[in-house]
Image (tube, rainbow, N blue to C red; front, side, top):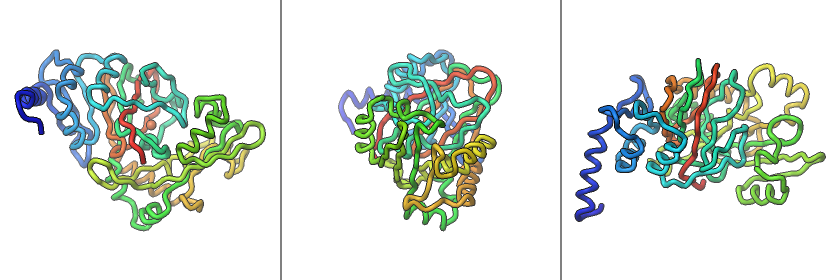
Length: 338
Ligand SMILES: [Fe+2]
């Protein structure tokens, strides 16, 4: 705790922090993100955040995700300033990516350009990376004509919904993500690793505890095994934090999956997951996990100018199908080593 004149000033700023904005849960039942709104017109979100770091941190610890709404319309530039004001401002790159996206400089990205008519299932960012972001930011520039929500789910509650057998199995074995590149489907390794140089890919894999194997015709297979349940570094809470269901072969969207599987065979799919000991995850277990996510899912429509700050280890996110233009900026901050 600081003392002296600085502390007085700090306290004064903190009291003004809650004078200017208010925060309440966005919904009524169970867990919901906190909705942060200005108490009067003309509150500058970035300016407020710059003098309210501790207040924002406390709100995030309590609500696990915060939707900032009703402030002046935010631009991409203001998002970087907001990120700087509310994090340690060390941003992550999208390496080892699974979907295409566009970099806008300053480590801001468009949200994935995954087809608009598909839903993206709930997931936490980077569970199969060795270093993942503790904070995610989404800024809505243009809200979709219909749909396009970013569903959220509290993953401590997801974990609570799973059977003791499922939890024990994953706790003991973890999960493995197997990826196959340049087999005619999915992103080429050159885009995923953002290099044309095999040696760079290998160095990245070694650094990140990813096993790799080159095949004929520029093919590459990688395998990364991680815990499926982790403890939140700040709260100590146990959280469901993995892509075991997300990348399981049974979770591929509809007709494409059958065509892919028929053409490739289930052992050559671009993504697959197993338990960490290599044994198959039964489809019934994947369904159990997806049902737990869905039961905890919370959705709200985007409004242009919204900024959503998510505690990535506490809250999973996804994307609903949409129509019309949808423009969302994304940033990942505060890398954490697993
Ligand atoms: Fe994501």
